[in-house]
Length: 165
Image (cartoon, rainbow, N blue to C red; front, top):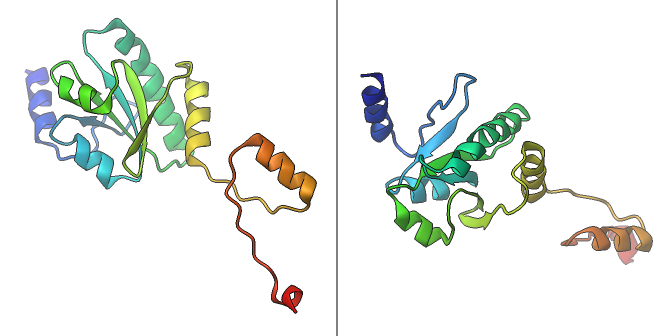
């Protein structure tokens, strides 16, 4: 009876409502083909786990995904977490051009699949790298070369008015 009631309540939730997946207070939203697109469009940054309930590998990733969500939430991250059981929703896999299990980060609706090791610290590092924007003041040419050698950089510079004269 409990499972039946839980299933009914999951089906009645809208895309913006979070479902507590575990007792620790996780706020991972259960997605489906009916709310997937809306959830991705309504949230700036979303990290999604695509899984199948019968797949052994999907089951292995679940606790790691939950740990990542918990860690990021405890650090104040604005990333929204969602998961979708694609067992009966294969059209999502086709549209997203992925298989399962998969992890995919969406920023402003554009997705990038996570392809590295499936370990909590690796995923957290990747998410922070993809979503954190550093601003550094460039002090000299050597500093500029160092920044450019480490990562792609978009540079903006502002001249002080007293230097224009």
